Image (cartoon, rainbow, N blue to C red):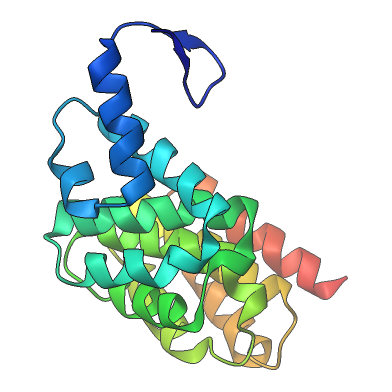
Length: 200
């Protein structure tokens, strides 16, 4: 049996029974089974689940509830699924989802911090009056030793700055100070581009 994968290419590497099993699991949305399935590569699983979530936005809170009790690698993967989906459709992010990723920014795992920051950046415009908690955690992450965490924080903070909310009165000077201490030009550029756009 030949099936089309998420990139539109034909994939005949797996036997028919395996393909049917993957379809069944996704349709039934047994998340534990999906994350325990060793035949799925991490990227493949993320792409399949994000496509599923885009088609079933009412399942966002179900995914978040599962992530809350998952170990860090699985939790990060769940948030990455939301990140993929909200990049295409920010409306998928519910209030419960937003609250979860805002809190996840403060967790120890760099992968969780990274993915949560990307979600916040994707959906900040949907929650302009609920950004304070997320922003506090993002500013803490702007000082993280990990470059990908700082990049993610910069992306989210930049998206918040672009909203031109009253938060900018204090946020822009803080972002400028972050730029002065930030060693990576690629991260500095994110802040500076957002500040420039907010001034237009």
